[in-house]
Image (cartoon, rainbow over all chains, first blue to last red; front, side, top):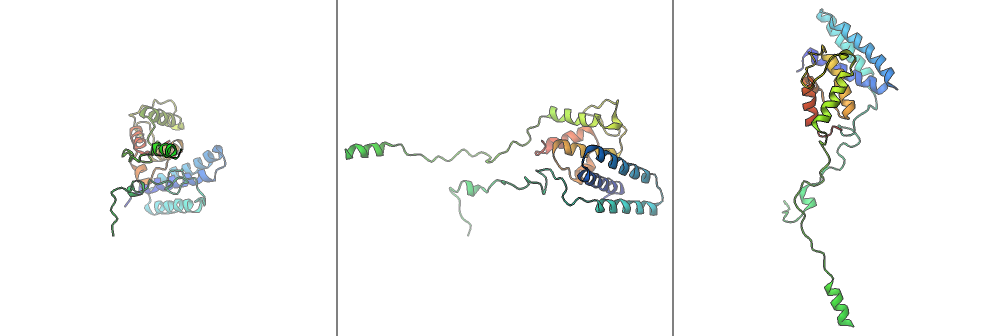
Length: 103
Length: 113
């Protein structure tokens, strides 16, 4: 269970990362991110719960629509190029002395 | 001659197999960043953010003291992720609300570069 603020911030983070993935340079990223930011900021003033619900739905739709098919993932993160590469082997593989096979 | 050859062969020292010292094998250079380096880089990121221009950022300031809301914090965390080459999960990102907490999180993250 997450709060409303957490939900909005998570959607915002996700959208910002999608914008970063689609931007070809940093200036383009800043422009698009600023637009998104001002839109979210305007919605923060809203007090009508039904309108708030609709705004959150819009942000969710935005984040889903702009989800990048091949996003940038840091190499060590889950799904990155180094993720689970060269995992340390089990001890009995490296040093089989005194290892009793479990049958 | 045969005897000499046999002596030569038998004198060759055979390799002795000694089990290596039990050390954490395949250890990697994780967590090599010093606290000072992390602090410097985090403060550099936060002080370069456009809403914190002209404000002094110390390792103990919270984002609230700098006049940043949760969306600014999200922006800063995305910048921190890019700087250190990591991915901060949403659950952890929700809890980070100050410079000190950012530094502590990075200290605990072995993959930070």
